[in-house]
Amino acid sequence: MKKILVTGTEGEVGSALLAQLAGRFDATGFDIKPGSTIQGDLTNYADIAAAAEGMDAIVHMAALLCSPEQDRSLDLNVKATANVLQAAVDKGVKRVVYCSTVWASGQGYTEPYLPIDEDVPCEPVCMYGQTKWLGELMAGWYARMHGLETVIIRFCGYHHVKGYTAHGTIDWEQADVPGLFKRYLGGGHKLMNPADLGLAFGQAIEKPGIAGHRFIVGVSTPYVASDAAGLKSIPAVLINRYYPGIPALLEELGIEIPPIPFFFSHEKARTQLGFRSRHDLGDIARLYRQWQDTR
Image (cartoon, rainbow, N blue to C red):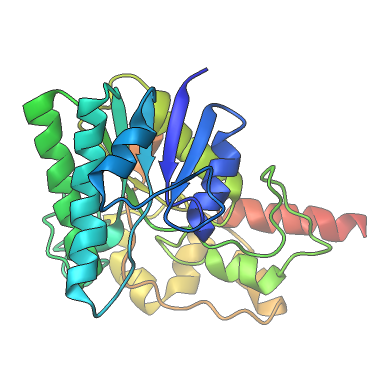
């Protein structure tokens, strides 16, 4: 069984990911906060180097989100990433999976076309996006100069919504039904199913032939470039085209369909990484109706 080190495991995303990966790998957590399997500071090279000893792969999740403190952002999102990559080289770790963000390209503010894909020019609009973009460049440099296998997940994010179980099913009796549907209405919303975390990052750890690639990972959607104008102005019409009857169901539930100003392509993640979110908007509607029919 592969030995995996996951950084940032005391946060919401890292803790959920560690639990998922633990069912597939010999997974160890690393965080500056107490409670992790290994407690350490990623800005201290010695800490991460010691933790990397004997590992087959590292999943680097730890990061500082939007912060006005420029120095801390650079330390935690750039210097720490360089330390992880250098430790991997020095300790013979084969692969590093770097969790970047869709904010690295601009999060819909600066990209020149839709859907936003992995090849779009990057013009970040915030320090978080800028430092994560620098982390991507760092990962590419270590791959070129040291032969380290690096895989970049350009992440839409993760936010748990009440109802999802750790196994990826939905307990509708306990679910936040409006919350579930609203999360699936956008073109690039965050994952909310913890099983999706395990699948996406598990594939990034194990799948051969993907080193040097980046993948956008979020809720799978069917939209194409010609849908862009309609998703902004008449989103219900476009949604009904792909998911017949869902706008009517949402109206019954009192859920308004918002404009969708940007969206992502998930084609590369599907075809090369082997990832599709377990549910999309159509799946949620189907499962909800099935539950209603059995009540």
